[in-house]
Structure formats: C-alpha cells, structure tokens
Image (tube, rainbow, N blue to C red; front, side, top):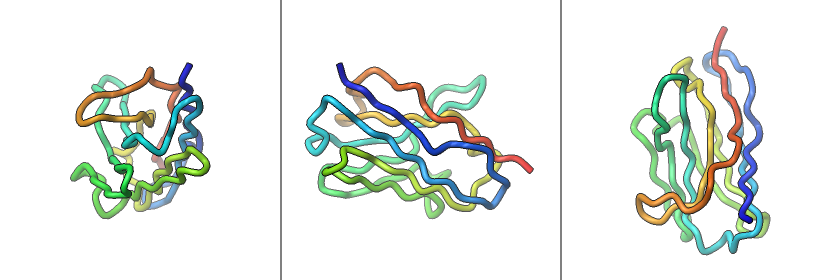
Length: 117
C-alpha cells in the first residue's frame, strides 16, 4: 500500500530553520498535488501548504513568507523549508496527496517539530 514517510523534524530555537521531507512510495507521485499539514497537542490537524503538479504553491496565512514547499518528482519527495520558526509552529507535521480538499491516502507517522528556547 501507499507509504508516506516524513522526516527532518527536531528541536529548534525560535527564529531557527528546519527542512522537512516526505517520501512517497507506491504511488505515481507526479500526478498528485501534495500538501503539508500539522497537528499540535489538543488541536485539530490543520493545513499548512500545498504544491500542485505544476508547481503552483499556496500557504496558510500563519506560515506565508516563512515556509516554502517544493517537490522533486523524480525522487517522489515533497519538502517543507521552514524559516523564522515560532513556538506556535510546534506540532507533528504530516504530508499527503490531495485532490481539492480531499486527502488521498492514510496518514504517515509524521515528524515532530518543537520550537523552544
């Protein structure tokens, strides 16, 4: 079945940067729009960013101008470059293929991002 494996999380100080990766297997990666989502403790999972098959990007207002989503179709991987991190960015980050508002596959294990001094 489809596998989505997120990595790259960790502990970082406010103002720092991290680059998350999500490797997708057993799908034809290039035909899917891909999204990043996050879930903080006690909160619902929320959308962070999307990149279309054509490379068009869209971001939640809370991360605009700080985060950059990109993709490598040859590697079947989507990335999230996170700069100027804030404590409120702390969450488990997930990726998935999306079709409009529809999540296409089961969620992976996610990768924990903690922003703290």
